[in-house]
Image (cartoon, rainbow, N blue to C red; front, side):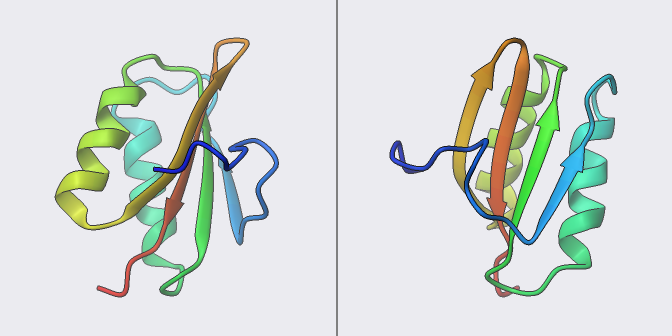
Length: 86
């Protein structure tokens, strides 16, 4: 994960706003979105559920999707996931 990427402004192929949804919905919706994307595309997910932090970190490790960046600003969590080739 790169510290130099600004999660909130980095260009993405798709953005998913899951603010207000509770676990596990932000991650489930992100997984669905990634399935519709091609390898190398980047998805931004915005969430307000603090539990999503560990969910997205674990998902990236287990799935092979790359978590490019993670940030929190004013209780909004931002994740950048890069779709893997698999």
